[in-house]
Length: 109
Length: 113
Image 1 (cartoon, rainbow over the protein chains, first blue to last red):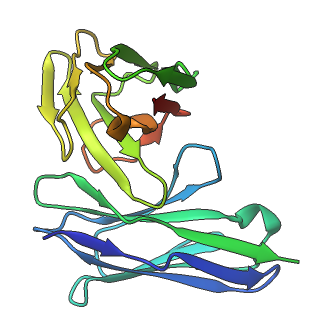
Image 2 (image 1 turned 90 degrees about the horizontal axis):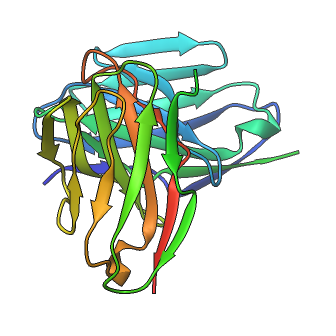
């Protein structure tokens, strides 16, 4: 079956760095997405990886290892506004997104 | 641009009632999607469309219907509402490729009692 696993909840301190891991099993693979979702709001796009390696976008970076079925989202210089759920989604051979349940990130002052 | 808009924002239905969730995008996107999000669960794809006149089932289509008569609109119809359809419904769209970024509407919170 197809599956996306990510931790349910993580806590970090303002100004610190946090890494949110995601492992995936999909039928075929056409890329890995990360979305941010603030409570009561819609998901918004953060990153898309289809090749192995690290993609950096300002304070956020995303890493993919296709051989290990593994990705992570790295958030640096954490700010209180980064408190949100982070959704990992793998795209299968039919180009459908398989979504993880999300990781709720709590930032403490 | 308003992006992706959804109406209504909230709705309470009685078991057996029907309703249509409206979704409109003004970005001239080809692809449109309907998802449901249950508490503590990932988004589940209900239906999607690759262009006007073309729709296809996603992972959880039972109890729902869609149509796509124009590029802009992608309504979701619930027939004979059941408590299991209590959820938050998101409409999304993407431009040319199915791997493009999906832009989400604000969601409709539906409760079936």
